Length: 309
Image (tube, rainbow, N blue to C red; front, side, top):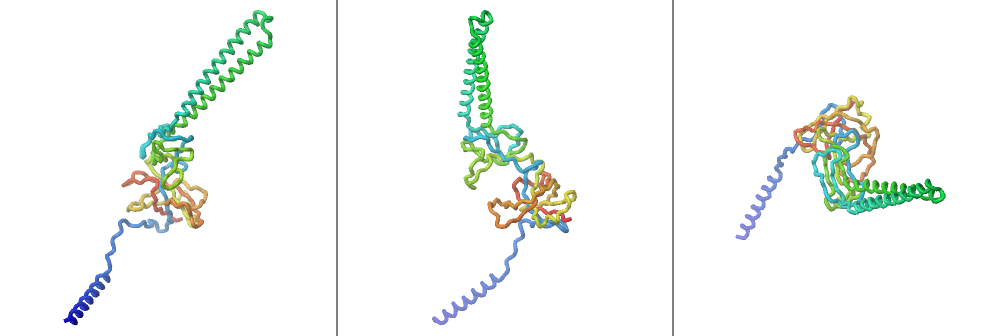
């Protein structure tokens, strides 16, 4: 009886092994890709990676830093908001500087009162001297005249100090430097900011308190071309390029804008801080219409193919 049980178990084990071998030997069906990888649209094309930016005549995005240090009292900017040049973005606590302005204004009043006193004394001495120069010596008259000039200089100094404090007070309000769109706001009410920016808890670095871009009717793409491919680049007037958006089957034609004629060390667009190899790249700037089937935002990484000469 026991022998039959042993043979039965062995037979069941053999069947399980054969079934497992059949199941695991069957090749799994390959899942179709979520989107097609970027392909070279040209017969001979040069590949480069790029990053989307706001379209501006020079530079990239506008990084906004305060000119003074302090605690943010109010944040009037919102991400995605279109603002005009001069619009108030942040208000920094200015209670101490406001007090300094009040002190400077009081000093102007004191200086003006001193000027009036000196001027009145001089006028009286001048009238007495004109009536009879024996009553007032020339030395007293000259001293009174010099006192008026000193008082006038004191008024001018106090007024300049008042203006200086007013200018400094205006720095506690951060304005938009140009027309554009607020892309990021990195400082909130209560945050401490300085001319170095605001401390980022996650990266441990100082960030601008806000980043602005140009109006997004059109966007720019900054492309970094490896130096070994520069010789294959066509003349500027013949440069044609196409952009592929990662994660979507979208091809966007690009309009060449300019070349930055200086080969620079490659940066890692994924925000890594270090490079292991000394690769140098030539930056090129393209433009494309912002009216795409779905939104494309500054900061996106894209694949770019440039038609080879």
